[in-house]
Image (spheres, rainbow, N blue to C red):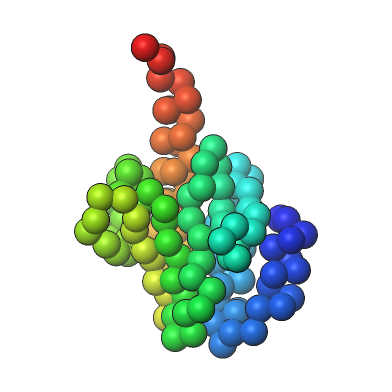
Length: 123
């Protein structure tokens, strides 16, 4: 875990802080993932930016997957219908726990797709 992200959490004054921290813990449990502060928010990465929090959200955790539409697999909790971004929302810590396996599935699908893209011959 990144010290800059730890510092961000130390200063983060939000009623959803515990739930946001739990989402972070779940994502970072995959050793392939890294994190940093981008756009004034924790951002999770593996061979590119995967997701960032909306730190202003006070009624739920909002996690934006920057290119979520390209993540392979069926992920029912991913919201959005545009060509690029997808969102995952959590109401509270209990909801984060309920969605943990799907969140880990998304992280795994992201990492595997990044690895397979890196193996594609460039023509």
